[in-house]
Image (cartoon, rainbow, N blue to C red):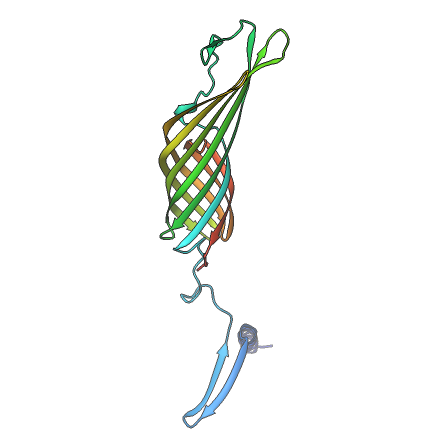
Length: 242
């Protein structure tokens, strides 16, 4: 077989393959005619490399309402850190026996947030945080509980979030809040005594992540009334992805 015939056959094979690819790529072909002539329309799958493809969907659109429920660890507001001192001398003016021993501290905390996204990167809203601590005092000789101390902290703050990364279902953001807090101190002895005081509540979360669109999970790390770590779930209303 001559070299020319080989080249001709190779060119024919390449042309046939390209034609097959073009046919496979096409989805529908229509022909129609009118008084101006005959027309042929071919519909093909979208090419992701073209400018007509849809952009990557963002987690939310502006004018979206958002509710969050979370739990926190490590309440760090200076007003209650440390919350219970180890002074065995007096508690609320009552002298403790020398054989008294402090038990461990137990803390529980929860938050509820509301936010309204003015733009897809800025949200304003409010947060309410409840933090409770309990610590027992025991008789070191009998190991029986002699006294129970409890502190509750309720903080209400306006809060702002700034989403500096938004891609697909992932949103990275920072938040800041400052407001009013109320401390309630309860002492269980032969009755219950309640003491109240107010303090300035604040919260700074330099790093937060939310994953999802309508329903989403989130985690935040920072300092303040909403703990060192805050994790939970949320729901968005009227959020239409782009």
